[in-house]
Image (cartoon, rainbow, N blue to C red; front, top):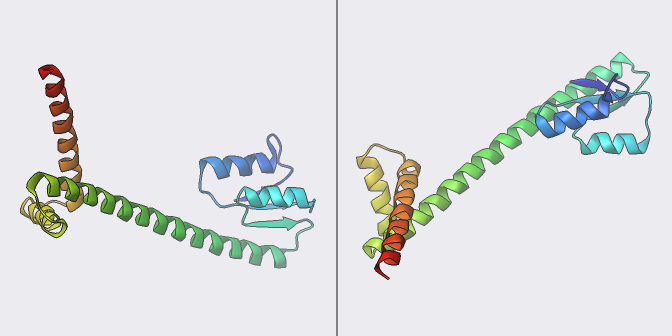
Length: 153
């Protein structure tokens, strides 16, 4: 998206702020003003380029192409980060369930993880899905045990 600083209404910076906070839409800003404070604010809001008028098409087109390429790289980096976070969450979840299995069945770490994988395979499920279910069940059992313990006292 190409924004002019002097857009009617909220202005280019206002639209840029909205795009930054609510979307992942890349944008380029152009303006008749090259003041450092405005350029800095646009940059902080994620502007991929800041072009000063009057614009020469021979300069504008390469700048927009470069901004598009940069936006694509940023998108790929965000996707990679999301995948890495998911993988980390899955490892943490599996580690918690392995700990529960170790305690419950007096297994070492490797045997507990093998048990988790084997059971997932038997049920034709993803390890993550089974781990989530087992952790939820374990938490419920702990709450139930705590409730029973309170009644006995």
